Image (tube, rainbow, N blue to C red):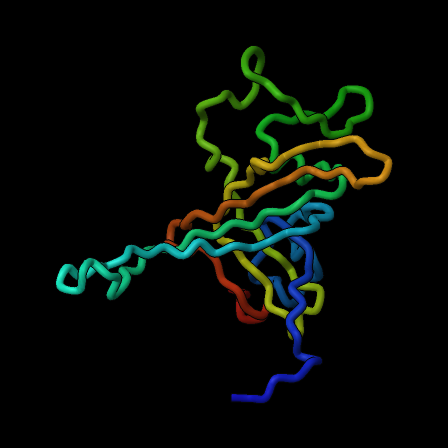
Length: 191
Protein backbone atom coordinates (compact mmCIF):
# COMPACT_ATOMS: atom_id res chain seq x y z
CA UNK A 1 0.00 0.00 0.00
CA UNK A 2 1.33 3.44 -0.93
CA UNK A 3 2.05 6.11 1.63
CA UNK A 4 -0.59 8.85 1.53
CA UNK A 5 0.41 12.26 0.18
CA UNK A 6 -1.30 15.58 0.83
CA UNK A 7 -1.37 16.39 -2.88
CA UNK A 8 -3.51 13.28 -3.40
CA UNK A 9 -6.34 14.46 -1.15
CA UNK A 10 -9.66 13.84 -2.78
CA UNK A 11 -11.73 16.89 -3.69
CA UNK A 12 -15.06 15.67 -5.02
CA UNK A 13 -16.02 18.71 -7.08
CA UNK A 14 -17.69 18.86 -10.44
CA UNK A 15 -20.84 19.64 -12.36
CA UNK A 16 -24.01 17.67 -12.98
CA UNK A 17 -25.39 16.82 -16.39
CA UNK A 18 -28.12 14.52 -17.55
CA UNK A 19 -28.18 12.12 -20.46
CA UNK A 20 -24.48 12.38 -21.43
CA UNK A 21 -23.19 10.29 -24.31
CA UNK A 22 -21.21 7.69 -22.35
CA UNK A 23 -18.97 6.99 -25.32
CA UNK A 24 -17.81 10.63 -25.30
CA UNK A 25 -16.89 11.07 -21.63
CA UNK A 26 -13.20 11.55 -22.45
CA UNK A 27 -13.46 13.11 -25.91
CA UNK A 28 -16.16 15.76 -25.42
CA UNK A 29 -15.92 18.44 -22.74
CA UNK A 30 -18.62 18.83 -20.11
CA UNK A 31 -21.57 18.23 -20.53
CA UNK A 32 -20.32 15.33 -22.71
CA UNK A 33 -23.04 15.76 -25.35
CA UNK A 34 -25.69 15.80 -22.58
CA UNK A 35 -27.39 18.72 -20.85
CA UNK A 36 -25.80 20.69 -17.99
CA UNK A 37 -27.99 21.11 -14.92
CA UNK A 38 -26.89 24.55 -13.76
CA UNK A 39 -24.94 25.34 -10.61
CA UNK A 40 -25.58 22.70 -7.97
CA UNK A 41 -23.94 23.43 -4.63
CA UNK A 42 -23.74 21.72 -1.26
CA UNK A 43 -24.45 18.41 -2.93
CA UNK A 44 -23.95 15.15 -1.15
CA UNK A 45 -23.89 11.65 -2.56
CA UNK A 46 -25.17 9.13 -0.05
CA UNK A 47 -25.05 5.36 -0.41
CA UNK A 48 -27.77 3.67 1.58
CA UNK A 49 -26.32 0.27 2.33
CA UNK A 50 -28.89 -2.42 2.77
CA UNK A 51 -28.36 -5.22 5.19
CA UNK A 52 -30.39 -7.42 7.49
CA UNK A 53 -28.98 -8.50 10.84
CA UNK A 54 -28.68 -12.21 11.58
CA UNK A 55 -29.12 -12.96 15.26
CA UNK A 56 -28.06 -16.10 17.06
CA UNK A 57 -30.47 -17.41 19.68
CA UNK A 58 -27.73 -19.50 21.24
CA UNK A 59 -25.90 -16.27 22.10
CA UNK A 60 -28.91 -14.43 23.48
CA UNK A 61 -29.99 -12.97 20.14
CA UNK A 62 -26.76 -11.03 19.54
CA UNK A 63 -25.97 -10.10 15.93
CA UNK A 64 -23.45 -12.53 14.46
CA UNK A 65 -23.68 -11.71 10.75
CA UNK A 66 -25.45 -9.65 8.11
CA UNK A 67 -27.26 -10.48 4.88
CA UNK A 68 -26.42 -8.02 2.13
CA UNK A 69 -29.16 -6.38 0.10
CA UNK A 70 -28.88 -4.00 -2.84
CA UNK A 71 -27.63 -0.49 -2.07
CA UNK A 72 -29.70 2.60 -2.61
CA UNK A 73 -28.10 5.89 -3.63
CA UNK A 74 -29.15 9.52 -3.77
CA UNK A 75 -27.60 12.89 -4.60
CA UNK A 76 -29.08 15.87 -2.81
CA UNK A 77 -28.06 19.45 -3.35
CA UNK A 78 -29.10 23.02 -3.91
CA UNK A 79 -29.74 24.33 -7.40
CA UNK A 80 -28.10 27.73 -7.04
CA UNK A 81 -29.44 29.35 -10.19
CA UNK A 82 -32.74 29.39 -12.02
CA UNK A 83 -31.51 27.02 -14.70
CA UNK A 84 -34.28 26.23 -17.22
CA UNK A 85 -32.98 22.73 -18.01
CA UNK A 86 -32.68 21.76 -14.34
CA UNK A 87 -36.11 23.19 -13.52
CA UNK A 88 -37.68 21.26 -16.41
CA UNK A 89 -36.06 18.03 -15.17
CA UNK A 90 -36.69 18.40 -11.43
CA UNK A 91 -40.16 19.94 -11.26
CA UNK A 92 -43.01 17.82 -12.64
CA UNK A 93 -44.88 20.74 -14.19
CA UNK A 94 -43.19 23.55 -16.09
CA UNK A 95 -43.80 25.48 -19.26
CA UNK A 96 -42.24 28.29 -21.23
CA UNK A 97 -43.57 31.78 -20.59
CA UNK A 98 -45.63 33.15 -23.48
CA UNK A 99 -43.97 36.57 -23.32
CA UNK A 100 -40.37 35.94 -22.21
CA UNK A 101 -39.94 32.34 -23.30
CA UNK A 102 -38.38 31.64 -19.87
CA UNK A 103 -39.21 28.54 -17.81
CA UNK A 104 -42.16 28.77 -15.38
CA UNK A 105 -42.50 26.30 -12.50
CA UNK A 106 -46.18 25.42 -12.05
CA UNK A 107 -47.73 23.97 -8.91
CA UNK A 108 -50.93 22.19 -9.99
CA UNK A 109 -53.45 19.87 -8.38
CA UNK A 110 -56.14 19.85 -11.06
CA UNK A 111 -57.28 21.37 -14.32
CA UNK A 112 -55.51 21.68 -17.62
CA UNK A 113 -52.72 19.61 -19.06
CA UNK A 114 -50.11 18.65 -16.47
CA UNK A 115 -48.57 15.68 -14.66
CA UNK A 116 -51.28 14.77 -12.23
CA UNK A 117 -50.73 13.65 -8.62
CA UNK A 118 -50.48 9.88 -8.45
CA UNK A 119 -48.36 9.44 -11.58
CA UNK A 120 -45.07 7.59 -11.38
CA UNK A 121 -42.02 9.83 -11.09
CA UNK A 122 -39.98 7.21 -12.98
CA UNK A 123 -41.43 8.55 -16.23
CA UNK A 124 -38.88 11.38 -15.81
CA UNK A 125 -35.91 9.11 -15.06
CA UNK A 126 -32.55 9.85 -16.67
CA UNK A 127 -28.85 9.09 -16.60
CA UNK A 128 -27.00 11.53 -14.33
CA UNK A 129 -23.28 12.25 -14.33
CA UNK A 130 -21.24 14.20 -11.82
CA UNK A 131 -18.41 15.19 -14.12
CA UNK A 132 -15.31 16.00 -12.05
CA UNK A 133 -13.46 19.29 -12.39
CA UNK A 134 -10.12 17.42 -12.53
CA UNK A 135 -11.03 14.42 -14.66
CA UNK A 136 -7.45 13.15 -14.97
CA UNK A 137 -7.23 12.20 -11.28
CA UNK A 138 -10.63 12.75 -9.64
CA UNK A 139 -13.38 10.15 -10.00
CA UNK A 140 -16.73 10.96 -11.51
CA UNK A 141 -20.07 9.58 -10.42
CA UNK A 142 -22.44 7.97 -12.89
CA UNK A 143 -26.01 7.12 -11.89
CA UNK A 144 -27.42 4.97 -14.69
CA UNK A 145 -31.08 5.57 -13.94
CA UNK A 146 -32.20 8.18 -11.47
CA UNK A 147 -35.41 9.98 -10.70
CA UNK A 148 -35.18 13.76 -10.23
CA UNK A 149 -37.21 15.07 -7.31
CA UNK A 150 -37.79 18.24 -5.37
CA UNK A 151 -36.12 17.57 -2.03
CA UNK A 152 -38.22 17.34 1.10
CA UNK A 153 -36.13 20.18 2.50
CA UNK A 154 -37.21 22.51 -0.32
CA UNK A 155 -37.58 26.04 0.95
CA UNK A 156 -37.32 29.24 -1.01
CA UNK A 157 -36.56 32.12 1.31
CA UNK A 158 -36.15 35.78 0.66
CA UNK A 159 -33.17 37.49 2.25
CA UNK A 160 -30.66 40.01 0.97
CA UNK A 161 -27.99 38.26 3.03
CA UNK A 162 -28.65 34.69 1.85
CA UNK A 163 -28.39 33.05 -1.53
CA UNK A 164 -31.64 31.50 -2.77
CA UNK A 165 -31.80 28.04 -4.25
CA UNK A 166 -33.96 25.01 -4.91
CA UNK A 167 -33.30 21.88 -2.86
CA UNK A 168 -33.19 18.95 -5.27
CA UNK A 169 -32.63 15.21 -5.05
CA UNK A 170 -31.73 12.59 -7.64
CA UNK A 171 -32.69 9.10 -6.42
CA UNK A 172 -30.93 6.20 -8.13
CA UNK A 173 -32.98 3.19 -9.16
CA UNK A 174 -31.75 0.10 -11.04
CA UNK A 175 -31.64 0.34 -14.82
CA UNK A 176 -32.72 -2.54 -17.10
CA UNK A 177 -29.33 -4.24 -16.47
CA UNK A 178 -29.56 -3.84 -12.68
CA UNK A 179 -26.90 -1.10 -12.56
CA UNK A 180 -27.34 1.63 -9.96
CA UNK A 181 -24.15 3.71 -9.90
CA UNK A 182 -20.43 3.63 -10.66
CA UNK A 183 -17.68 5.82 -9.23
CA UNK A 184 -14.41 6.04 -11.13
CA UNK A 185 -12.31 7.96 -13.60
CA UNK A 186 -14.25 9.05 -16.67
CA UNK A 187 -12.08 6.91 -18.94
CA UNK A 188 -13.21 3.85 -16.97
CA UNK A 189 -16.87 4.90 -16.92
CA UNK A 190 -16.90 5.37 -20.69
CA UNK A 191 -18.87 2.71 -22.55
